Length: 456
Image (cartoon, rainbow, N blue to C red; front, side, top):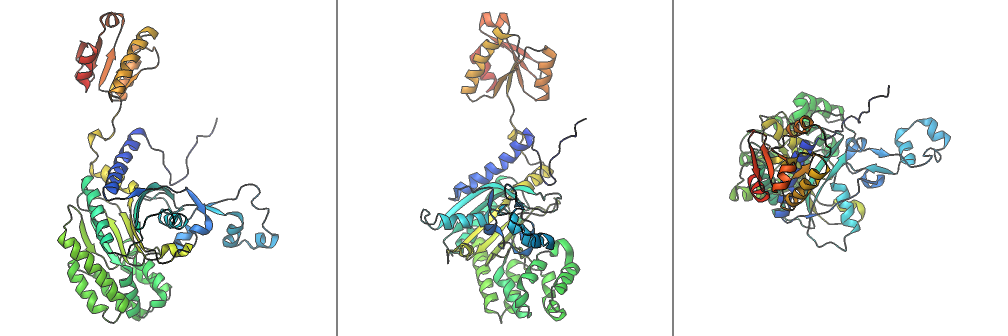
């Protein structure tokens, strides 16, 4: 007996209903992207390894899926390297390409390659799949879609304000209430590391701090100590673990804490500008909150950073995130091009909408009319009507086989098709159709125009 096929862990098949629901989400997001002036681009699903490696920090690099070179990929590996079993060195010899980890680094590469064709500031959006060799769990997959919007070529903080408004617009359109847009600034984190005497451990400090909601204060402390951050430094940073108050109250506390750090004070100034603007142009349904423990592990963020938390009633992590990166394109040779961008987690937003029952009933439209097949003569008569209905935008189909009535009606029931049409010799002679409402069971004999009016 043949073994039942399967799919890799962390990937999924999508049913017609699921695809329709996913398209609904991406459609809302795309509509808002366009409303805010973003233009669509697409990039390849895989990139040269050197485009991706070294851009996401040590943890990110480990999660990049590598693609083996075609042909005899071990042919160029010498015996000594093979015998050493050093996977890092070996991988660079047998794999030159990798699946994209996110859409931001490929976008930076795109900007550099097409810089002479781009009008700056360049506002782009991109909705495509990405891949991460992560441990699969609820809301975390190895293959998933990102919905990104970025602006490059402007240092204006009005871009950050615009992105907060974009987040709010999308979640308002999706009817998700209770969303919290968490915000911080990498300059503030640098300032904190400076005042506690851990500037040389900035990356280790931010990576550990970013895990506070996952592993708790004790877990963060243990990780920081393991990375060489002193106990005295931890004592200085401990107030951040329970940093309470309104956004503006938190800003005032930070001003005191970071008064000796020029970098930290610059971050506070940027945050204050954004918060003041949002205070003047209020959000619809989302809430903006300053979270000083928010670090986001990616090394390329340099200014404001964002993470969107799902409503508390849903057991879900972040459903979006992003931030400012002042010189991401510099890694590809194009200096002094600042950018800022955000991402929506389509898969997690799907789970939130599903759990809260927020998908509209009309989100997964199926065939509206099924024509029963009584034979070739009757099928031809019905197909002419199907053709006219489709031209009028009505989803219609003819059952392909002259099967038993019970089977055809059962098909309509399982597909939840609201109307079934029967047309035999009598109807053909009268140029009519017998239309059955599958919910009420009522049947009517109508001409085409009456029938079209009924189902429209």
